[in-house]
Image 1 (cartoon, helix red, strand yellow):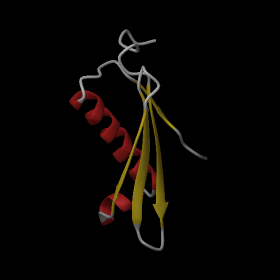
Image 2 (cartoon, rainbow, N blue to C red):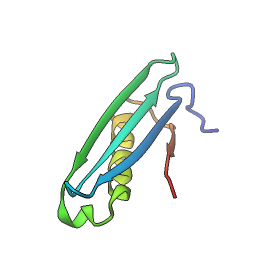
Image 3 (cartoon, rainbow, N blue to C red):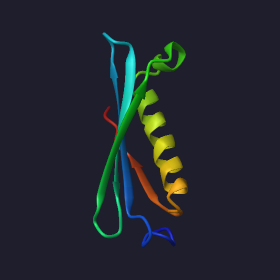
Image 4 (cartoon, rainbow, N blue to C red):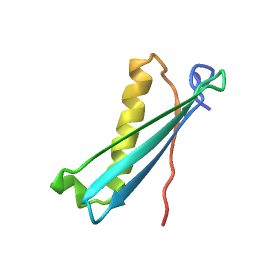
Length: 85
């Protein structure tokens, strides 16, 4: 385990892609030490990025999670990316 897990328990990220809209998106769930759950989402439609389909959403979500943790002073977090084959 990371040395700062008492500050920030986990972040879970998943990405998606909607072919008809050519849009990718992410959902991100943060679980804080007091069991507070914070949920965020976002997405994009950059044509070059959309070629990666749901991976683009997953990457965007992972970047969001890291930025959110840093912005909120929560170093040493555990991050998991949920993917489907």
